Amino acid sequence: MNETAQPRFAEELAAFEAKKPELLKLCEGKFAVFKGAQFLGVFDTPMAAYSAAIAKWGNVPFLIKQVLKIERVESIPALSLGVINARI
Amino acid sequence: MPVFNVYPHGHPVAAAPDLLAAVGLLLPVEINIPQALADNLQSQGQTLPQVVTGGALVDTGASCCCVEESLLVGLGLQPIDQVPMTGATGTRVQNVYLAKLSFPNSPIPPLEIRVIGAQMSASNLACLVGRDLLRHCLLIYNGPMGSYTLSF
Image 1: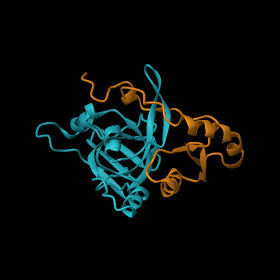
Image 2: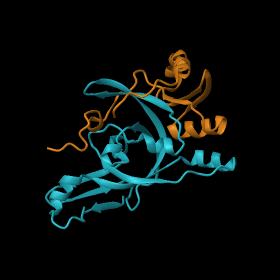
Image 3: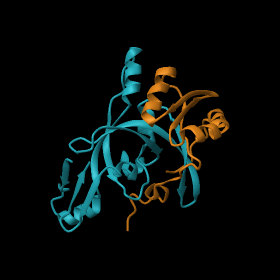
């Protein structure tokens, strides 16, 4: 895990943040789909969200974001510390 | 619940416990595009990408699964999200993809899940199996026997 990814989804994230208070009230924990400012809907699983987005737009970039008050931070120490193949 | 007992072997000298300690919990993995994308591509008459195979290391320290990003890009997958990740030097952003993972000859069924795209080609691993997948599994590491048991 050497470099941070190029920022993507600026427009989608702005649309998500604008809609987030409403989504938190109605469907916290579900998965919301955005392409640009377009909102496709919320789905129970990432796979359901993906299937709907692929059917709607095809294989193009779109955002699938879980509706959570605080976004979870992932942790993969082996990669972030670069110790998968350390010689000790 | 199907049970998968693994006894790493293949080294002429190393004892099983030492071999397991050296290589860890390795599984063969196949990485593919989700069925929804395959259906979409086929409906347009496009050729489906070849399944990618490699090694997956079970990593109980990882909160989620990750896959070498160049493999995901090679399959034609698009990122579906970006997530912050903690590291020794702070927080960074990584792309998230939806991919289909299969573990041949294991009890884990093919899964279509969110995976983090990571740069780990130097490790010769294709995938790290994290706790998001392990939450569905029973995993027993038997160090003295040099084996591990996995059931799903």
